[in-house]
Image (cartoon, rainbow, N blue to C red):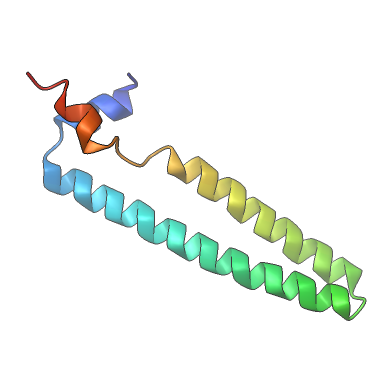
Length: 86
């Protein structure tokens, strides 16, 4: 278990819940911006602006990578951590 996961298990539940809420809100923001970029890429591709379509697609791809990276910081499920507290 990594130090980050160990400190989450030892932290106060309110801190863990606040961290989880912040991460989920960032994920929602990233997905919203990513959808906006994808619609922009589609709009630019339909208007034959390939350069702008490519840049918005790359921006959307980078947001997807950031979202996947952020997913690793979500806390473990409660069922998994309850079995370890004896």
